Length: 421
Image 1 (cartoon, rainbow, N blue to C red):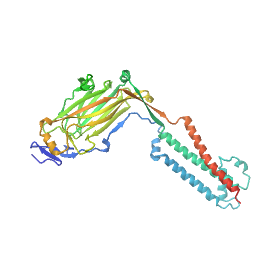
Image 2: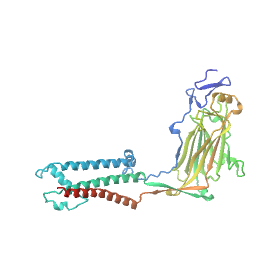
Image 3: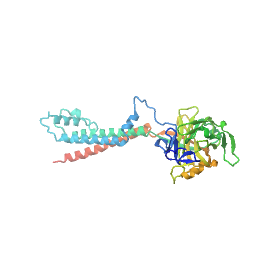
Image 4: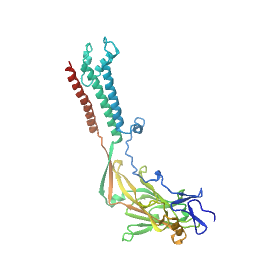
C-alpha cells in the first residue's frame, strides 16, 4: 500500500479514507475540508415579484436606487442648495448699487421679481426707481420655499418608488376542496456531499404517508408520487424527485434511501445539499424554492464530522399553501427548511477508522420528511400605501410647510427692518 494523501488515514491495511469532515478530491487525489461558502447558505424565495412594471425606457428605477440609497440624499442636497441660495442673496445685499445700472443692482432687481409666492404685483410697479427691502426678501424666501418644496417632493417620490406597497397576510382554515385546488409541479433535489456515486445507492422505492405507527400510516411505491432518478455530480450523488401536478392531500410524507459500502468506495459523507422548488402548473413563471447546505446538526460543537452508520439523517421540510389574490388567485406552495436531525456521525479519526472496519456500519441512511401544513391557507395580497388622495394630501402638506416656514421668516424680517432707525 502506498502512503495515504494528506488529511487521510489507512484502514483495513490497504485502503485510505479522508479524516472526519474531509472529502476526497479525485482529480487532485487529496482530501479537502468541506466548508460552506456564502452562496451555499439557506436561500428562500416566494416566487412572486411585487415590483411595478414601468417602461424601462422611461423610468430606470434601478439606476435611481443605485445612486440614491435613501431619502437622506435628497434632503442633504436640498439643504445644500437652500443654504447656497440664502448665502448668495446675503452676499448680494452687500454689493454697491451705484447709479442703478451696475450688476449688483440688476441681480437684486431680478431677485425681487422672483417673489412668486408672497407678492404678485411687482411687475405692475416696474417703473419705480427705489426698490423696497421687503421685495428682495420676498424673492429670496420665495425661491427658498420652492427649493425646500422640490427637495421634499423628490424625497416623497423616492418613498413612493421604494415603499409603494405592503404585503398583507390573511390566514384562514381550509377544507379538502381548498387543498385539492393546489396543483403544483414540485422538484426535490438532495445531494449527499461525498466521493460516492449512484452505484452506492439502495432502497429508493417506497413512500410512507401519515404518521408512522398510527392508523393513518400508508406504504406505497414511490412511483405513484414522483419520478425519481440519481445523478452523479461533482459534489456527490444527487437524488431527484419530480412530481408533476402534485396534489398534496396527506400531511406527512417520508421517503428514505441509503448508500452502502462498495469496494474501494466506502459509504461516507460530510454534508447534504438540498434544493426544493414548487411552481404552479398553469403559471410556471412563478417559482418558489428553498435551498441550502447542512453539514453538522449540533449548535454546540461545530467541528467537522463524517456521516456514516445505521441512524438516519433526517431532513425536515414544511410546505405552506399560499394564495396570491393580487396575482389572479395564484396558488403556490412555499417550501421551507425546518431542521436537520443528524444520524450516525464521527468527529474523531480513530472512531471513523473503527467504523470503516466494521461491515455493520457500512451505510448512510437518509430520510426526507415533508410536512404539508394543510390546516390553514395563507392568503397574500399587496396593497398600495400611497393612493391618489393620500399623495395629493402629502403634496399639499409639503407645499404648505415650505411656504409657511419662509413666510414666518419674511414676516419676522420685515417687522425688524421697518423698526430699524
